[in-house]
Length: 330
Image (cartoon, rainbow, N blue to C red):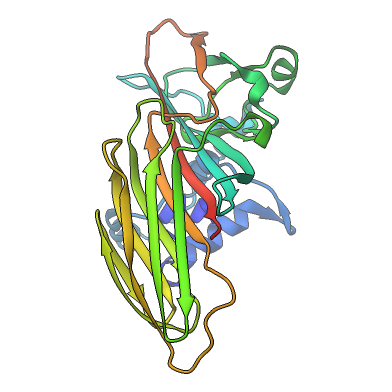
């Protein structure tokens, strides 16, 4: 699925139907007798050209195949994920640390369970055959890790340093898990309150930022699966807007950016189905948010060095914290 997104921008039934030839070619290279064979996107891109409008016109006129007639240069070396003879006028390497918080919080605000799922998305455009090392300030935070094949695992085990010859272009360098014992304070807090009685009910939800080290909490959105007896909602948000779907019984409140100056609130009345008993339980609140320039785990890069090449590239590291499966019970 990730490979299809790399090639087509997104993956849907319509895209697969329109690009079924490319899909067939990709699957033919990725699988050998039912077993995974070539799965690296950079290698596949050398073997099968991604579809473009201009490329489709040229192929139709010339009758040329999209498949490459030669093996990728990397397949003939001991570094199959990187092609040979790479040259760039501007050499650059960027690494994005993305951490997603999975948490379950009870109605009193106590964290029942929490964990962080993180990964490093990389975009490397460097000439030649560079050798990179990345060290961290606090690598012992990482409980469970998985690497791109380019990473030298023995050096990581011995020194907790990432040493690798990177693929050319975009790739995921590492995925990691951080357990609840190392999770710091959550970026937001939510206090929901529901009261149901026969024929009607009320709702009051308050949201505010917590310890974010001075960073803004953005793209905040709350989603609730309301009980089936709820017919309609008449609510007033202090910030943002809400939408209730009477068919799916889904209530969404789009807040946007949270500020430390004031709390935001959504409150109002609920219309229940006439004659139906009130719900036995309150709905849970699913929270979505993003905090730029923050790694909530505290993981930080100490050094990023490049060897085997004499040029000085542009280097950049960015951190982002997002909500994963973030649920507040009421």
